[in-house]
Length: 479
Image (cartoon, rainbow, N blue to C red; front, side, top):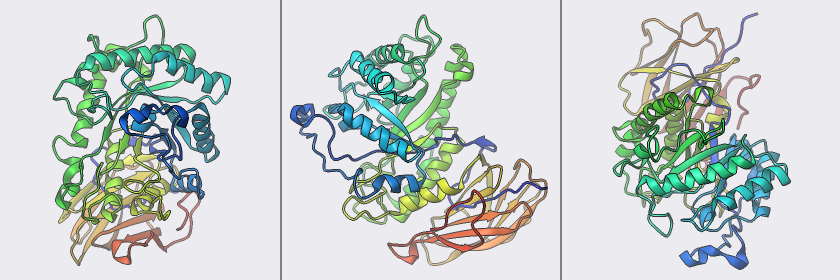
């Protein structure tokens, strides 16, 4: 009996590396925002003009179920407010249990807040969560955005203070539970003008945070993290379409950091404990554009999320965690109306269909606004196409599954090759409207068995539509 493979084609982003395994916890989110964060009676954030009462709605109106339905695998409980006002132990447990009840793994941030909280505070929290309460939380991040100016950050622009508290925290946290996975330094963004990331990742250097805890078999950090919000509301459409692969943007940053960590792994003989990279906070902007066509709730933002996840898969990230679940400005759920934004729908298309191994896509023709993501698991092969062009026309395209010379016709020819277990070559031709996302599912014989279409022109309340095919075993649920 032949194995069945599915190719889900989300018209999203062109990928340059073939055969990259997608980690099981790759699809992440941030658990923002809660009703209360910290001790209301003793709210240390008041000194910065931040109260512990936030009036967030993540625990209301079945929001955790919607997070589950979107396909989130890992959720971070952290950020600026959680660093300034340490959550109560009840709040930590509430997030852990809420996430786990939906099959989602929690990532907990221990606060530092410029030495307001100490390594002993962090160790006591690990002991309470993992020993006393037996929650066995695996993922722990240390501090938040040390390179941001006060009062929101620590104003640490050199490696010395970051290395000091990171190593101190990691030593005491892992002394309580050596099996935990620690993350840091949670930089605001990847920028090495002050040599901060270079100094922290110079193996054997004075500020090295990538080595082994002295006298033990475990390491200070297991995952190197930073945040990415490329725009502050002044972005243009052209910038959003090219940002992720422009020089000195996220794709290039990840290449630079990966090369540094390869050196660290070799120097410290990390072997099977090789350092990984993760984005613990990201979105297309930290402040929305005055143009609703370009802000974090737009259709283009959803496509931007897809492309960013495609880049993350290509570069081997452990996970990408978007900011955030539910808030007015950046949430993929609107906290006023509980509307599911295009970012939610695009995210769900990815989590439902892009699984297993990420595969290289090659594109030729008039394609600057058309991007592709492809993946295959033991059951199906998936290719996702994103048309970001905003005219009033469409692209004719052909998708070739398998190796050999591209034989398709149309404006754009797409080839996905070297798919494990696929010995034949098949070609499928179709068209895709401007400002729309498409997803195709094929069986091993090249038959189209499922097709999704998601178009901005269908209106602000549009959702992905299942156009063709049955619901396959282990495939995405229909909307």
